[in-house]
Amino acid sequence: MSQILQTPPTQRTTFDVVKTGLRPQWVRYLVAGVGAAAVDLSVFHLLATVVLPCVGEVMSETVRSQRFMIDKTFAFLIANVSSYTMNSRWVFEQGRHRESTEVTLFVSMSVLSYLGGMQLGRFLIEFFAAPSHLAAVACIGLATIMNYVIRKTVVFRR
Image 1 (cartoon, rainbow, N blue to C red):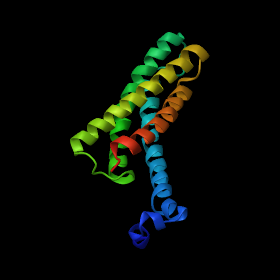
Image 2: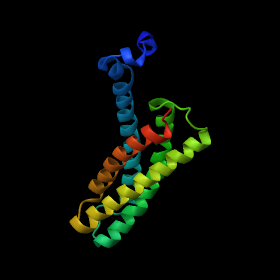
Image 3: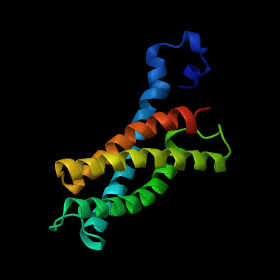
């Protein structure tokens, strides 16, 4: 593998690039993402069923949407800490920015994708009466796509 990395970029094949960079990183990103999603959904489920219910109780879509946003916000905060830890230590290479700048960029970009996902979740609940858990999964799906692109091109780019 070290021979491939020492080969000048013009002599590398597509297979070499996939083998050394893209595929393993996608696999690591997928595993880290599943881990962060599990944290997010577990915390959300606990909050949404026990602390501030927005699942399994009769209430208006507006009240359910408001509770959903509060539950999802706390779940996001906890999941984002685990996501940063996994992404910065295992998925992407650190080094483009000082650690404080990297954390600030990571959190800022995560908040942007969180806000996009939150609007999608509210939309699904209020206009389609979607179940809260489905809205939560949709938030994670949108955030995953946005986060990968932003993290790859801005936060952890060398």
